[in-house]
View 1 (tube, rainbow, N blue to C red):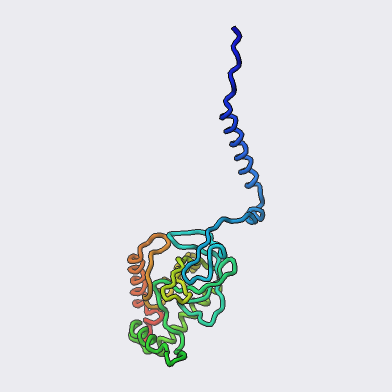
View 2 (view 1 turned 90 degrees about the vertical axis):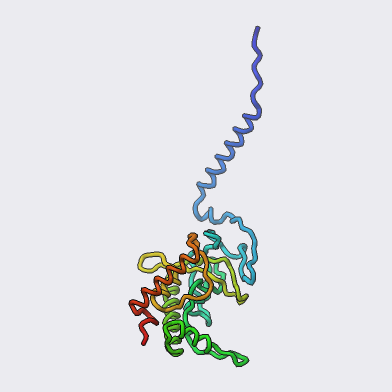
Length: 239
């Protein structure tokens, strides 16, 4: 008896065809030039942060680390209110936002009076008392040094912003960690200010993007402050 040929497995044929198409598409994409790849539309999710002038659809988020949105290659933007711990930043796509450092507070860099009779003199007095009992005038001088250190450093090189877009005072200033290059190493700006005696440990703490708990980072900053006192760095060298 002549055996009839068995019917081919149609499902196997379909799967082989799908696999071949997938491999072809993958190879086609990876033969694109970098410029051609960058022209491909990027996927994103729209989200408006409370009080934020930016959304994910408006600003390029290069990464997300430890719950923080990361913006690499940021630059300092000139603004009247730029100070040692708060400054305007231009993000990689040209959008601008004002950021405030976690953990630290640099003294006010000038005595100011505001409409309605308010001023910052009481705040300067508090800063002076907590930074070794110096005079308010000395506090302002250290505030100017902290301002120049921060703004000169940020103006000299691109830097990275890590933020969750939290603005506790709803004033369009957003807390952030700022990563810079100093001495050939990546450093947090708040640490540099403390170890140079240019800031007091104050304001909002937060876990670091790498997962270091806020309490552990606070202890580290206090160690840096003790070292600054021993070496009489910055404010701790005033008499």
